[in-house]
Image 1: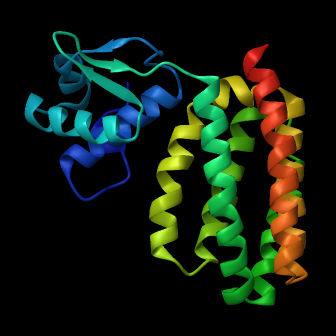
Image 2 (image 1 turned 180 degrees about the vertical axis):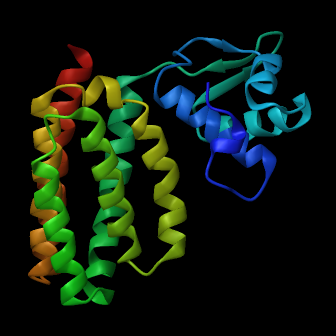
Image 3 (image 1 turned 45 degrees about the horizontal axis):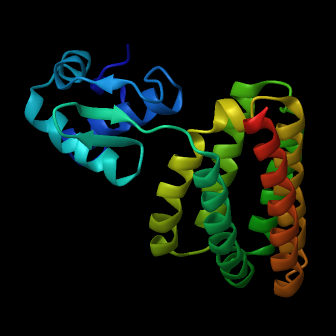
Length: 218
């Protein structure tokens, strides 16, 4: 198991433990419905139980675990209704992000985003490489918005959607749809047409959500 010392350095020890918990849950090494014992986390991360409790509270706010009386921390179940809601909220924030990127990003920056999106299409056959690259593109996109507040709002959504990675994006068709969505949005941004870009976000997000839901329910 990875220990806290291997995590990218956040601000505090509870933050580091929270990052570890997020990874374990997203990768389903801690499965939906599984109880997470404080002592287990403390041993894995080589820490006392105090910061583990703080980390549990932070991860609960993200909706990844539930803190239940007499049971403690339990990994939240996956829910198709939650997935639909997350997609709707992310689509709304993405429309805002697209408009800000069109306003603040240079032609060179938008061109690099298109190049990254095209490269992503070449990685869909490898699930792990695809998600590393798609996460990098997502970070690149948010930087172009010139808005720390927007980044703070979208990060929890990204973490929550990541939980569905092994279900909604586990097949090649869903990954191809995701890569195509990235490219269509990036190309619309290069045209610097806000209305067209927002319509593109609405269209490709709807298609992608349908594909992910179909895979999740299979």
